Length: 319
Image (tube, rainbow, N blue to C red; front, side, top):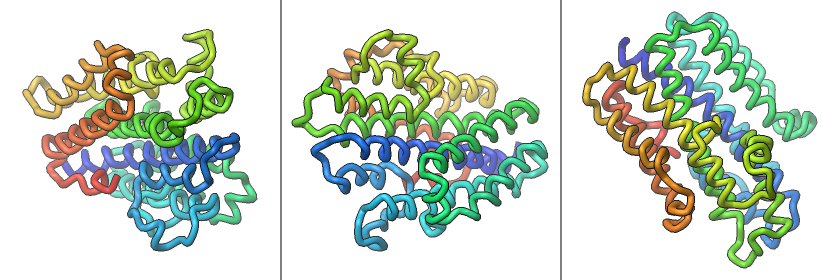
C-alpha cells in the first residue's frame, strides 16, 4: 500500500475518534459543572482547553470562559483545527481523497456526517440540547466504525484505520482520566465524599463504563478502581490495555515480522499494561503515570509516521 493512502486512512480514523472523544470530554465537564463544588466555572472548564486539541488561542478570541464560548470554540469553530467541526471536515477530506480504498458505505456515512455538521451553529445546538449534540457526535463515530468493520476488506487499509482508532482512543482515555483526577479534584476536597462519588460516576458514564464498573466491582465507586478499569483491564473496550492489545496485534500484521521500532515501542507499553498493578500506578502518582503514558503514546504515533507513513506528524503536535 502507498504510504500516502495509508496516511489518509490512518488520519481518517484518528480524526473521527478524536471528534468523538472531544465530545466525551465536553460532556463530562458539563456533567461535572452541575455538581456542587468549591471550584469556579472557569476553573471547571479550563482543563478542557488544556487537553482538547486546538490552536491554543481561546483567550485571545473570547472574553470569558463560559458554556457558550467553550462550545463555540471546541465544538463549532472552523478556525480551530482541533474543534469537532474541523475534525469531521478533515476526516471527510481524508475519505474523499481515498474513496477507491474504502467502501461506498463508509464514504456515504462520513459525507452525511459532514453535511449535517455544517448545519449546526450555537443556537441550533442549544435548541437541540448540548447532551443530544454530544450523543450525535458519538453515534456518528460509532456508525463509521461499524460500517468500516462490516463493509471493508480486512486488509492493510482496514488495519491502518484500526491503528489510528486505537492510538487515538488510548490518548484520549488517558486525558479524560487525568482531567478528573489531577485537575478537577481540588486538594482540599474529601476523597470518597458524595461530590467525589458523583464526579467519578459522571466520568464513567462519559466513557460508557458505568455499567461495566458495577458489573465487575459490585461496590461503591472508588478512584483506584476506576483507574484500574480504564488503565489495566484488557476486557474494557476503552482501557489503555485493550487499546494497546489491538495496536500491537495490528502492528504485527502490518510489519510482517520486520524488526520495526514502532513494534518495539508498542510491545514495551503493552507489557507494562499487561503486567502492571494499580498499586504501583498510584505509588508513582496517577497524574505522573498518565503523563508518561501520553508522552509514550505520542512517541509511538511519531514512530508509526516514520516507519509507515513517512510524513511529519503535524496534527498530533497540536495536541
